[in-house]
Length: 323
Image (cartoon, rainbow, N blue to C red):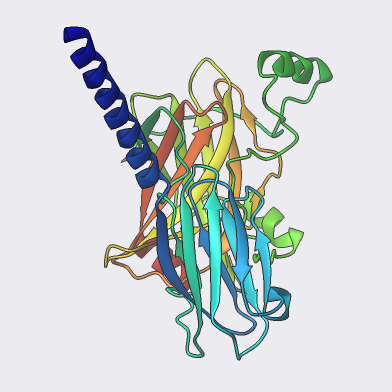
């Protein structure tokens, strides 16, 4: 009798555990619904947390109405609308983390370019790292050796690094780096001039927990694009393997917008040697930024041990664009 009760309880326990697992999985895979606005000829970008796959639900071929593309890292969808009259359209999206989305697409003629052409459905950062370190502005200056090459130049050095980090392809950008495919780059002469120019801002940021400092040197505009020049200083004893970067606009009203780079110069993400420094240019589509807004810049190492972030006052951006 006791054994029979035990078996019944055991069966009930297993059933309850199975139901609980099912319910947990159901919650994890729950589909979220969103609505986006589009306009003919306007490129819209939707950002997600992990890589995505997507399908249109349309009464006829979706290519008659839209062109659908992905960013390089596959974590953003690019949608170009080809017609003014659209049928009821639903975009179903599945992320590799199991999250699913149902996105309703609506046409709007008087679209707000800042708030209705870029949609951030991600966790608003690039962090897959173990720690997030906020850098604070400092007056203390460092004088380190200028490193001119993005990567160690000699073949022996590269062979040694490949043995140490066999999982990293130094000839390619980090897979976590999202690129804005809609970005139109300026001529090389402008970028070269900016890269070799004297610092105009020279705002240094540091945190005593790490030996990496970031100095914002210049912020310039050319046409519809903006260019942030930063100096990354490695005051440590080990190489710093420059990883993914992201600039975000943090508006006064609490909303945010990911300003993905159209390009990063130099193209090969630098390996910064100990006691060395190298300048980078982060090129992105320019937006209107008020003096009350802020910009958050994030940079991580390729090993994803740390994610460094710093804030640039909107007044700095506003003044640079005004000039």
